[in-house]
Structures are given as structure tokens and as C-alpha cells.
Amino acid sequence: MIKIGQILTTHGHKGEVKVFPLTDDPNRFDDLKFVFLNLPDGYTKMHINSVKYHKNFVILKLKEITDMSAAEKLRNIYICVQEEQLITLPEDHYFIFQLIGLEVYENEKYLGKVKDVIQTGSNDVYIVQGNKKEVLIPALKTVVKNIDLQTKKMFVELPEGLVD
Image (cartoon, rainbow, N blue to C red; front, side):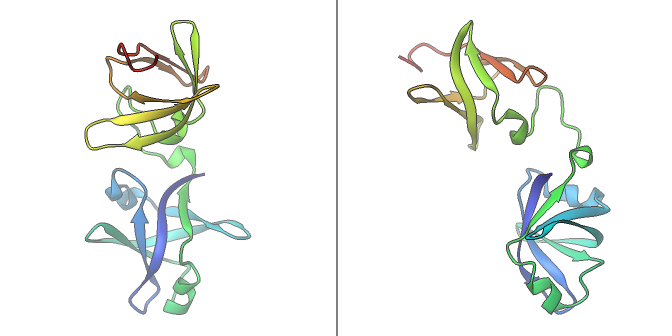
């Protein structure tokens, strides 16, 4: 399951919920017929009746949630989709969850594993945890030469001075 949003609060009195999107494209909610809520007792499938947008938030009306008191119980719950519900990305673009855990190599030298991704305004930065220290690697085509999701490896060519 992949998180695509988090329910913050209720919206109105008919059971709508205000969602903080955890996706680069909040409009992706328009194409979804159902989602899974990560409830304390497990994932529960919910059907989407309607989607609206307000400022930087998504307002969802879920078929199974009929009033404000039911919606209130969903505060802070994550909205998830299955991997097959993901949108298709352009070539050489990846979801963050696909990058976490990749082993990073420069030539034959093992640098560590991708621990996290920082999303900056211009380009992402991969946080790679090595044996002794962290390395911040810019996600640029001049630096990241190949990503192989099958072998879970990333090959880079670091700029001079990035790692001593």
C-alpha cells in the first residue's frame, strides 16, 4: 500500500473529509474509484463519491462515511492505494518508495543505501546512508547514471568534492 494522502479533519456535516495530499499531483484523486484507509485494525476499502479541491487540500466524499461523526473518527488516518492503482510515470521518473532502500554505487564502490529523498524546488536530493556517514546526492542526470529497480541498485558519478 502506498500513502497518497492524510485525512486532517471533517468538512461540512455530510461526512466529507479534508485531505492533505502526499502526492505531486493532487488531481490524481479524480481518477480513483476507491481507496484504502489505514485504520488501526487494518486496511479498509472505501469508495469515492466525489472529489473537490480547496486551496492546497482535497475534499473527499466517501460512500461509506455518511455523517460528520463518522468522518471525525478518521482524523489523521492515511489514505492509500495499491501499487497497481499508481499513475504511470514518464521514463526515468520514480516514486520515492521505489528509491528507498536502493544500494548506491560509484563504479564498483558501495556508497550506502537510499534512506530518504528530500524534495527541493529545483531537484530532489537522495540521502544515502553509508557505513560511517550520510551522503547527499543530487538527483540530476549528470550524477545519477542508472537506476535498476530489478536489482535494487543505483549507479552514480559524483561531482568532485562531494565525498572526501
